[in-house]
Image 1 (tube, rainbow, N blue to C red):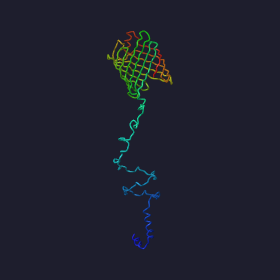
Image 2: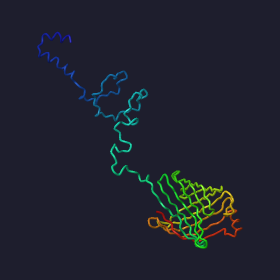
Image 3: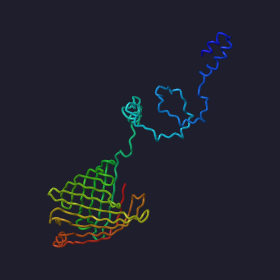
Image 4: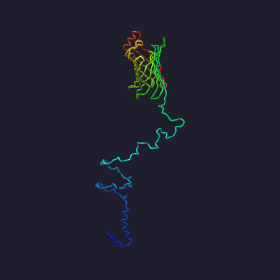
Length: 327
């Protein structure tokens, strides 16, 4: 620079421009057009470089190739996210313009009102599981159930028994009115009141019904009568499907009592076993199924001796025919 100062007085303006132009050009140079692909920087030591004050806001790294970069050896132990502001991320209070819980966004539903899911609407149904004639006994058996409600709560009316078709034409039935509710995926519970025409007594009833393993339809109902007698009915049924229409249905029912009642041919313990096998043919979308079958009933334990003392049969069998349907 001293030489330049000594020379300046002896040169003109044009010569000055020639001397200073290389310096100005160097100051105005940028590195954006420089090609660094041939430079090897692997041996450079950057550990002493402080880049904390550098402004990278104007750097464009969109065209950089990071495929060869490896971060496996980087030490992230000193990184802290405790001071980061995440208030805008999901969670917390919704913004003022968030969608309304019913998805209406403040718009009314019109003349038809708010839509309702079909599963929440109350409905009703009637199921006749057995309406058949026993030829040997000259009696009509029946098992009928009706209900009203939805998938979570129902009011259920159920009756089962037999009607004699000759002589005094007695009707023996056990009817109940109960509240029904699911207990789990495969089981439902019910509780209510019942009346038995055979002993002319009313009772409190509680039971459970559902599907046991191997698709066995199972039910257990307990009846507590006004005189303290407790009756327990256990039933099981299985549908063995031969094809799309023909179905074989074996079923069994066991009756147990808590104490003796000789007036009604009841003894403490197991009293009666009823079994039946039906061959059904499903038609009309499986809502109607005529059947033929064979039934067998037998007294158990002390009930056999009690019936013999009264000259009553302890074992009965019969061919049956009837129909089952629902709507």
